[in-house]
Picture 1 (tube, rainbow, N blue to C red):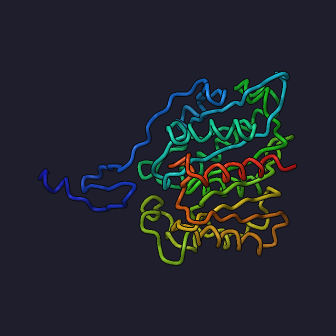
Picture 2 (picture 1 turned 90 degrees about the vertical axis):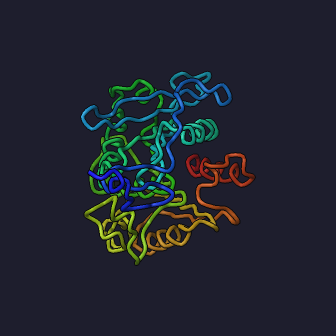
Picture 3 (picture 1 turned 45 degrees about the vertical axis):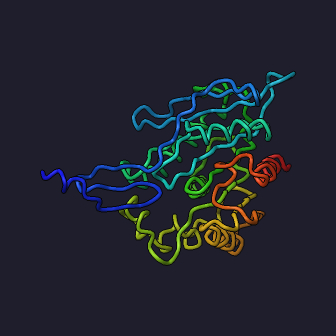
Length: 306
């Protein structure tokens, strides 16, 4: 093969990845790995666990400081990272730093599921991995699951699903599956936290079409436009928090999701929060931003609001 031909770029989806004529994928951004362990600043412990050896799905668990009562039970946050379905990692430094801080602030146990990435693993594989992750987590509800932290320290009547950007889209999809599939007894998904969520529009999203060959990439796909999904009124949780940022190109899509939900006949309570003069996932990329702390506290109050 002509080497110059093999270097020809046939797709360029900045800022995520480009595809060469010979099929090679080159990402513009690669997550920096952060090892698990004890974080002295927050006193949060973390460790990595295998969920499925067959599909290579894994997760990182975060445990807040346990004082006085070693048998204390915490709410559970099941988290799905962002990255356009093709980047990011539960083991990356951005995700690790955020969850250390948030787990300490909110006093929750968090499980961040590391789903397989497109395009090497085309969608809907990531959605299926995310669902598998939730099933693995709730298998601990009887106290006899494979991980002792989840057996001993989680109140499974207070489960929250969360994600940012593409991860918010995935979290919503998992919530819809849980709405029509019975989970273990004692498991209750109380809330859904969607931060700067990625949803669709009328015009096809060419990158999403490439990542998910079975999708049109436009709003006739229920995963991109939940408003056309007949399951939406049955959404399993009782509370939803949708957060957007004023300068985010996804801002209107998040607002569209909120409007579709509240007008669907769903019986829960939804809240819409917009951060003014802020861009996409600013609280992750710039944790010291003066508006990041108030937003994290809003997340925490959503989880701890009884």
